[in-house]
Image 1 (cartoon, helix red, strand yellow):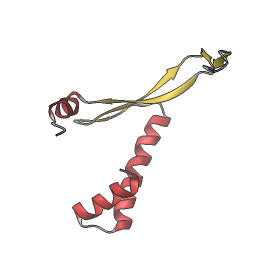
Image 2 (cartoon, rainbow, N blue to C red):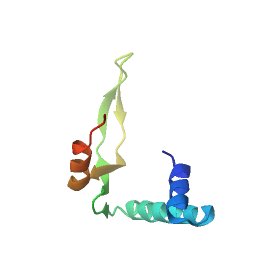
Image 3 (tube, helix red, strand yellow):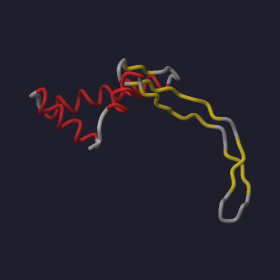
Image 4 (spheres, rainbow, N blue to C red):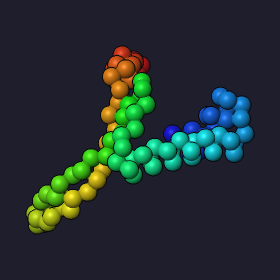
Length: 95
């Protein structure tokens, strides 16, 4: 599923125009990204939480040449599913 699919699904479920659905999705994504840029976690109850994590500098290795190099420190966004959603997923049959 891509963003266009999400917008289309919202259009159909809510009976709103494509422009309104697109605006809603874009607004939500903007709010999430804005909070993460400020290093604030985003929590959606029953779904999960996004957090920005600091990764330290470390040594990497090219598997082909075995040459070592330094991987620079960086920030990464991690997602942690809620226990409720994790339980729903584990109890769902994939048959």
